[in-house]
Image (cartoon, rainbow, N blue to C red):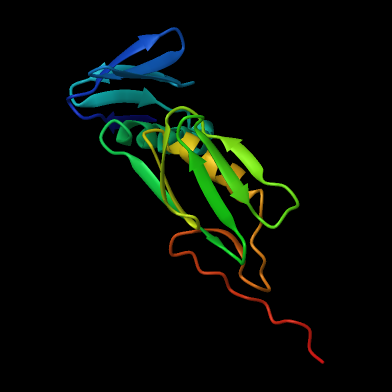
Amino acid sequence: MQIIFKIPSFISVYSKNNFIVFNYQDLEKTYYFPFKWKKCLNGILIDVPAQKLNIFKTHLSILKKDLLSFQITFQREINLVGIGYRVFYDKEKNKLEFKLGFSHPVYVTVPSGILVRWLKPTKLILKSKNYQQLTQFLAFLRSFRKIDVYKGKGILFKNEKVSLKQGKKS
């Protein structure tokens, strides 16, 4: 099966070993692509064996996010919900300090490529050109304090609704 994947005209594409390389101005992204492909007029023509169609769809969705990052910046806002839950950002050290009800604060170094905007002690905005890196870092942050389904406390995304479970009946 042959599929045409459209690529915007301002992005150049070339091959390096088994990798596909996308280039735009000074940005360059290298991506492992296990399928045969060749350049065509408005994108790339990809040969996909029928038995590997599901794997191809996964690669294609990741590829679309990577190409989208040339044009936009991804952003997520997190809220700390709970009494005493606070976050502070140290710009010089590029570290976040979380106070999450433990006996000690939790310190996290922000990876390069992620920008932090500290709004207030319970609100934080994270921005990045790399969608995968941003979501992975957010999952890492949320792992410190899982959402309490009985009280609705924890590290939540903006507009995230927590359906509370009913407590013990007497």
